[in-house]
Amino acid sequence: MSTHTSTDTDAARQHPVDEPPSGVTRRRLLGTAGAAGAAGLAVGAGASAGWAATRSEPEPLTSLGATRVPFHGTRQPGITTPLQAHGHLAAFDLAPGAGRTGAAALLRRWSSAAERLMAGEPWPGERAGADVGRDAGPSSLTVTFGFGRGFFSRTGLRSRMPRELAPLPDFSSDALDRARSGGDLWVQIGADDGLVAFQALRLLQRLAGEAARLRWQFSGFNRSPGATAHPTTMRNLMGQLDGTNNPKPQDEEFDERVFVPGDGSPSWMANGSYAVFRRIRMLLDDWDAEPLRDQERVIGRRKSDGAPLSGGDEDTAPDLERRRGGSPAIAADAHIRVAAPETNGGAAMLRRSFSFHDGFRDDGAPDAGLLFVAWQADPLRGFVPVQRKLDRGDALSRFLRHEASALFAVPGGAAEGEYVGQPLLEG
Figure (spheres, rainbow, N blue to C red):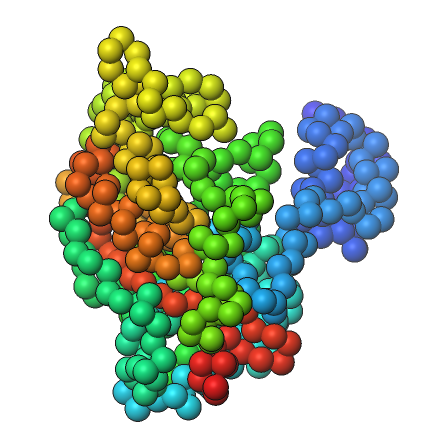
């Protein structure tokens, strides 16, 4: 026996379940249902009031998509910008014969596209991927460009290549895939919406045209903004808080450690930085088999809250001299001791990395880890001394495999009407 009233039946005829009333999209209906709760949908005749309510403009679900990062400025975006939830890193090689003219035209196209996409505007006349992110705003999109050593050879600018771009030394823990390392041009994309990030990657790849070919590309992720009750340091795939000891913009020596001075040399790198990239696979099955106490000893911090084993909370400076029961509270080979600026002549860098998971290997282990990106004014004083120290005696090293590597000079930002790298290519 039917329990529908005549009012229910009439409403059903006017607005079938698969077809909301005019002006009400399925998305708005679902958003209203989520806000009202399931009880509101079970009210029967009261549903007509619900339909009427949805005709007014709905409140935004979140402000996440509306966040915009400016493209133009003294420094490029994506260095001190808060970490986004989605990222793509890609390297391109200039085509033979592209030369300085072709590279300049490419950087102009890329800069124009980045400017528009970061403002939440479509790229005119470009169909590939154009509809992917159309429903979202800028979503904190950033696009950052850099140059590898090969860029200077292919453009006839070897005399203007900075000394800081010297090849990174070989490390005993390296197991590098050369095909997924290096590159003439580097692109870093970050956004809080995965479709927005993909759209940017797809468009830049298309705009490369005949001037450059893709050498390698990796995709990564981080925790989404708003997923925690309050801002926290991100966790890596080992479950550890990662980035506690990062230099902070309010630190007195932050700019000196991260950015080339405005009057620095070479002049075209003024307000720029150097990015070291490493694809670091984590041996997660081996790590997960370790008892919690041993994991914490390897890192030198509590897993639960990131506090150093010497005491305090996450923000407490590790006491490298403290002893417990006759032994150092933080082991001699603990990661935070070996990497600490105090044990490396003050060497420090800004780490701004993404986690990755690229499926499973033949043995069933996850192909997952960290897309490590470190920013510094000089890699010979930042990354290199720290990695040499880690290479010799870091307890964490036995759970890591460095499988790809690259170093890029990332020039300062572009002024209005200019493109990234213009002082180098037209100076």
